[in-house]
Image 1 (tube, one colour):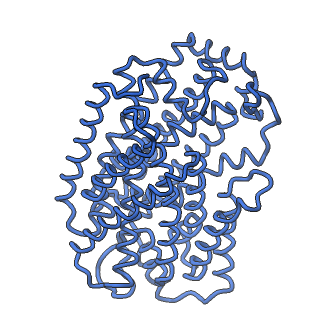
Image 2 (tube, one colour; image 1 turned 135 degrees about the vertical axis):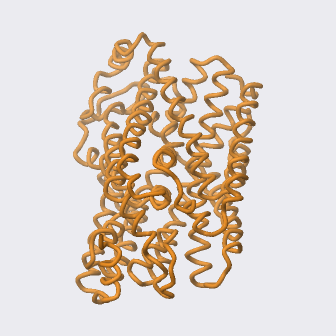
Image 3 (tube, helix red, strand yellow; image 1 turned 30 degrees about the horizontal axis):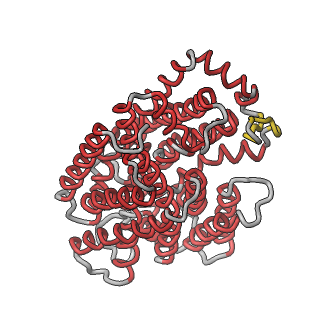
Length: 503
């Protein structure tokens, strides 16, 4: 593919840019308070919520990291797909309905005025009647989102360089600016509705490319034969294969640690604020059941197509692919006519943005609602809070760009942030929704223990265990220790939980 922008590519990108800006402008008029900006006023239906949630958690790493992983080591990565699909389903079944209902019922515990919890830190504080939970969880969100945003902007820079022939730095800056503009304008609503568009783009891009690639190598049989010719163990979920010295070599069996690490991605859904915000923003609790079905179908389709693309890169390029994370881009350039290739790459750019916009909205709402409003100006008017949230979007974008310019592997950065969220918030959210005995101190210790373990574990790991596992265990242990040995439960906390959970 040419290193200069094809006319069709420019047109597609400009049409997309116009569409998201129009959605942002439309949503701008709908934002009259923090509930609108942070969770869309709780008025999104099942389909939009499910597609938006899946697009939000499956953008840049599905196009870059996952195909690259299958290109490098084959079917051993299937455990990650199983874990992610299972986690997405369980999050809808276990968390979605209750979080939607309880977050709407819990008001500000300090004033007892009618209201609702519109951010995850706010929900924790109101659930356990202690503001330490608000600022500690808010700090964890900001810390791990900086890393997550960095991965998104790295992918944006790569795509821009391929489409328009720019440097990756220029691409990072321009892509970040686009996301910043429509996210700051429309908040949650703009993020959700653009995610639906981006979700369809992702779905069809991955599906069509995988079908074309399979046809190119002679069908499913041809793909299997080509991959097995490189190394039969590439098709085994239990064989450890690595690309070493220009060939795929079986270096070991897939260990128990590797299988568990892949499956452990499931619990990341239990603590990811950009996914949980979708649950909080549903129009009705009943959306959870149908949303689970839609989400599982999308997960299997998207992740399965990414795996096929990784295998297809093996069959078509052999060992000649310089960067494994370029598998999707290289196949598009190889298999698609120029004008179609431009559309596919422009489509990926929009998909990359689907994660960044959601993260920016959550991070900015956290800064405004859980720091400024709580600790600096409790009487701040709603319009002021919305404008401060837009300023916070700008600040979060700037920090994310700085991280992106440091470089790094997309899947590695995503995995680290995903682990941080799952370990920090997964145990305490489950306890908040299902346990009347959990105390504020147990919740606080859980967040600190889980997040700190993820942050530090890589410095001591010697077996390749995914940091989400020790982090989640540490969060559970911190929860138990805090409940068992910390301050006793406040009767008001138990009473409010009984009221909220009463049918």
